[in-house]
Image (cartoon, rainbow, N blue to C red; front, side):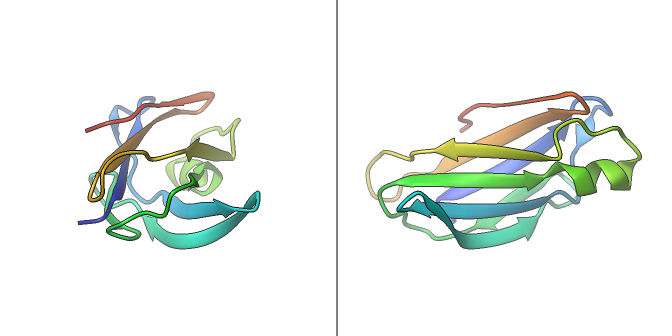
Length: 112
């Protein structure tokens, strides 16, 4: 199982954010390095995303909100949502990072 998973909920439309391009990056020497990329499925999820084990350090999930907004005919104030995080835990830990999205706001939290 992937150590990192995510999903997008479109709170403006009241449904999953399907078709959102997402990149997983590892931050090395303050520069992002691409680890994986995917597009959310019909349920707004990316279940297999990146490695099973993580290097210690900072990671970023980068959501392409502009392309999703264009595809759904919505306004878009934030063209990109970037969530930077440091996963800490024993080997084999799982980190689920959801994104709640609307045309003029977004929020996140550590899920389960």
